[in-house]
Image (cartoon, rainbow, N blue to C red; front, side, top):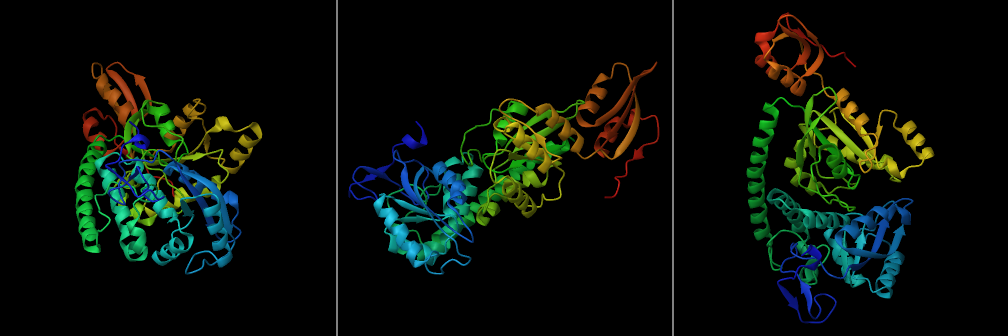
Length: 456
C-alpha cells in the first residue's frame, strides 16, 4: 500500500472542508503516516522585484511533490513585502477571489512567512496558508525513510513550528491533514512550547548518537585509503539515476523533488584501476530552509569530508545558472566550497545540437552526460580520475613475482604511473599516501619523493 493509499488512524465526522465527513485527519500536525487520496487544490503566490508567473515553476514542482494540484498563480512585483500580509491589499483581494472561485484548499507562498503574516493571511483568506519552508519540510517528511532522516526532518519541523505556535493560534487546531501537517513527529495539537523544547533536546541527542554511528562507518572508509567522491546537486537533477548508472546502486529514482534523502555509498572503479567510494546525498534547492541545513548537517558532512564533489546539474533546466549557484552556496555553507569539483551536466539527451553547443560554451570544463542513455559516462569517469587529489608521495617499487596482491592493491588504492617487468619481479612507479607507503615500504628501491603541488 502506498503512502497515498494508507488508511489513517481516525476520521473526522464534521463534514466540513477541514476534517470533513469520513475524511482522514492526522493525529498530529507533524504526522506522515498517510497521504490524501485527492490532491489539494492550491493557489501559488510569488512576491519580488520583477517576478513573473514563470518564476513559480519550481514552487509548482514542489507543490506537486507534496501532493498539491496548483490551480492558479498570483504574482506581485515589489521590493519590500507587506509586513502584515506579505502582499498588498489589492493582491490579497485577488488571492481571496481565486481561492473561493476555484475552491482552493491551500495558498502556497514562495517565501518564508513570519508567524504574524501567517496568522493574518489565514484569517483573511479563509484557507490554509503554507510558506516555502513548510512546503519543503513537508516533502522531506514524506520521503524520509531511515531513523536518522526522520529525526533530522522532525527536528527541522519543530524548530520551524516553535516560534509559530502563538502566531498560528486557531490555525493550530486544523484537523484536515495534508500539506504542512505531515512529519514523523508524535506531537499533539495541544502541545505547548515546553513539550516541543523537550522533544527538540531529545532529537538533538538522538541525532548526535546516530551521527557517531555514521562517523564510525566513515572512519572505516577513510582508513581504507580509498578516496571519497560526494555526488551533490540541485534536486531532481538526476543524481540518483547517475549513481545507479555509475555503480548499479539501485537507488530509488523518481521524477520528483527530494525523492531520495538518505545517503547511499558504493564503490566505483575509475580508468587506470583506481577505486573510489561514491556517496549520493540529499538534493539542494533555492531558499533551502536554514533549519533543514542545520538538522541535516551530520549527513551533509559526507560532502564536506569528501576528496571531490561530483556536482550534477540538469543541463535542460531553464535556470541552470541559478541552480548551480544555489548548490555552490550551500556547499560553501557546510564547508565544502573549496573542494575539487567535477561538473556533470546531466540530461544531455533532452538537448538539441544548438543547446549542446551553448552549454559547452557556457561551461567549458563541464562534462555533458546522460545518466539515462549512458552518453558521456566514460568521459565523466576519466574527469573524476583526473580531478582527484594526487597522492603526495612518489615511489619506485620492486614487487617480486608471486606478490601480485601488492600490485593489485596499488591499482585500487594508489595511482600507478607505470609498470615494467624485471628479472626479479615488477617495477612499479606510483604515487601513494602515507598509509599506503607503510604497507609497501619493504618493496621501495629508491628514495621516496614528496610531490609538491604547484601554487595557483
